[in-house]
Length: 289
Image (tube, rainbow, N blue to C red; front, top):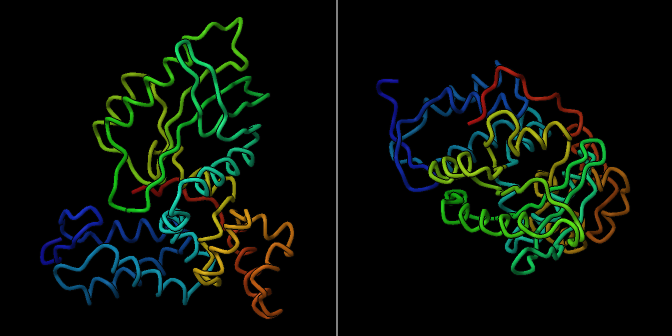
């Protein structure tokens, strides 16, 4: 990679631009090998030192959008999760939607009595086939450079320990697993502690073969902020009406009524959703980044 410029990542750190990482992220979104290599080549040839990863993403997204909107939408998935804010409630509702699509019975913002105090957990889920009950703490961030760190993992572990310690003969609901979920990434310290202490983590790229991106792709569950055919204001209005995932729109197109789209635009949005939901699963040889 001699001669390649140094770029600025979302967290402010600098690194030499690696075209292969861009190719991997494009292919992971569903782009063909030729398309991914061509886009990476165009960007590499025009890149200047000091370019931000955000600028590189925007250029790759624009080029990919010309090729295939559904693929561009999935490529933008990480940014789409960031746009669910500013509060964490839409993210909580989206994760609940994802778990339901995976076969879980879900309750949100549930009060569970621990050995010492009562706790409000963001998500409580049970799976009949797996005979499993879990509580999840969700940490939403709208800064792509922010990572969920060790102190959060410590805090979550202490809450789960109190729930695990309560008397099973008197508590209302059993908890077998504790899960910490974030829409961004974890620090290496948080991961090391969680793996040692027995706290399950779910983030954008962790764990490697069952991370948030892969679970969304497998379940074909995507936030409406993924759609390229809607404006930011239109997406905000739908979120305020409780429309969080694109499959909600496909199941009932009347959910688009509050934003008063023309028949032509409705057709375009539905076509993008259909293409997005039909995208193939991520190839096994594509390693998450």
